[in-house]
Amino acid sequence: MLTTLQLDSAFRLPTPSKTISHKHGRYPLVGGNTFSYGGFEYPINTTDKSGVRSDILTPIVDELKAIQTIYSRVLFTRFDLRIPKGTTVEISNDWMRLLFKKLRERLKSKNRRPKGITSPINNFAYGWVCEKEKAKQVHYHCWIALPHRITQRLGGPTYGVGSAIIDIWCDLTMGEHTLVDLLGKDDRFPSNYVIERGKPETLEGPIKWVSYLAKERGKNQTGKGHRVHSTSKLRNKK
Image (cartoon, rainbow, N blue to C red; front, side, top):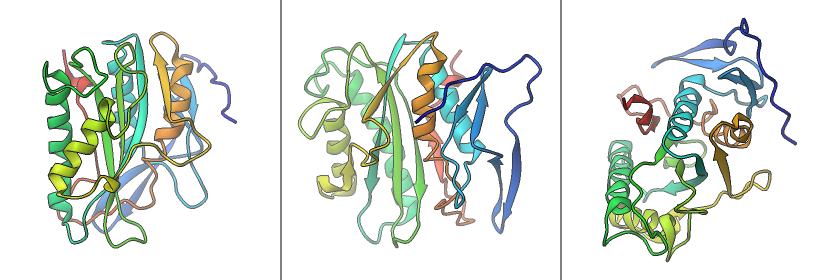
């Protein structure tokens, strides 16, 4: 069960972290099982086998805060993507860039919006991480935050934002729809959350859920400049 948020004092220190070095560089790791943000402590998915990287989690939470300046109620959910065998990380990372570029175009379009999306979606937040563990091929964990007044769920193969994700990913990869998993299979979490402006406690579930994407384990650092994570840049808009 998720714990209740506790308000920090004005003098509370930032989230404790330590630096982990590897042969291709270094990254900061959250110390402990909570993440301090905006004066609140949020539980995260720290385990004995894998900590949580603050360089991945912090920009995600920044984006979730940024989209609340645009929409008062935000739908937050996750989906997973696989790639055809033999695909290089360079190619698949470019597919990720194109996926969200094309998705933005579709959601803004008057005539090409997915079934069930009755109004243009001009802004949304998103992010992804690239992982490779026991499988030979990398895979991607993704999250997306959308205006709740326009869409109350991600959708499926034939409707909603989910249908656009499937269509675009299949076009990019020349693969089957089975490469896309719109809903996670973790029974500890619902299929989506609603984040409400002015209610920081509504970030508790999403941060706990998305902190899994920031886990230390599985991040395939190649040393060749390949990104292992990325987010939208709403936080940079003036």
